[in-house]
Length: 388
Ligand SMILES: *Cc1c(COP(=O)(O)O)cnc(C)c1O
Image: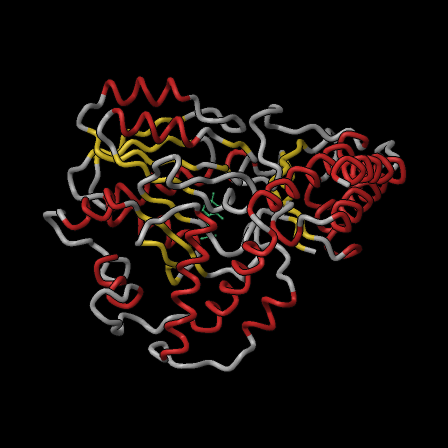
């Protein structure tokens, strides 16, 4: 059971889709699959953006693709960090030759819009703003709509990391007017790792067309990638697409479409509420304040005197359950429990609460795993009654 910060459990239908025979990357049947993926991605991202496609590579490649295409040497880029992933954006923008204005916000909290507003007032030369919507290192959700609006008020394009948010909480690319967004296949989409869907607005595409220098990465240069992914001038080879991985993504997106985004968001919220009740009964406290949390990543403080690595070891070896450790500045202090995509199920919530309860008990903590499971169970039952 995968209940860490991703990858999440992959449903059998996705693995079966990936086991279908490999065809050529320009086979007309495969071109149809590519077109279907682009349409399903437009639904998942809630956008009509023409440039909507999966990049061949993990979420980090989606991040680097957006930055490499929108940033030119000498540009001023504002990166707001409130966790591990913002740091990467800074490093990437710096390698693209940008002057990075780096805003460090407290970890475990949402980004404060007034801090971005003040930074943009001090840096009228800025052309791009980048931030993470749902920080997987802490489980904090920022108000992407407001932050993007601030970027536009100051003449900047906005790059949004939706690797953990897409499919778990609302992400509305067109309504929020996001310029460039990327996600990952292995979090709330519950596909295997290795693909990074992206979507770029018309404004962002024009910005790329008007660059004065070529994109420093040949592989990530979207003007070249689109010769393969977009049919305007006929398809031609750019790189050999990961055919079978894309079959899997197609099935993952088909499943999300079948469930419906609103239902997927509600499912994440409901199971998060049940997990929270179980964790509270075990005395585990969230690091992110209520109201700033994402349901799909539950970061809780390791109780005093508990060997956090020994607990994860016990979960893995006695319960076949993986949860995440703390990243970066929070390593050793927290656990990160994922409820992403197919991992976001009643069975997983029960197993997780019971297993953590037993592992804490084994280390001498006075907790009642049975009562904690009952508490999670009670929450699930009352939610089912409410939606029935
Ligand atoms: C996981 C994650 C990434 C990186 O994705 P990879 O597939 O590991 O490269 C980037 N941003 C956020 C917020 C993530 O959670």
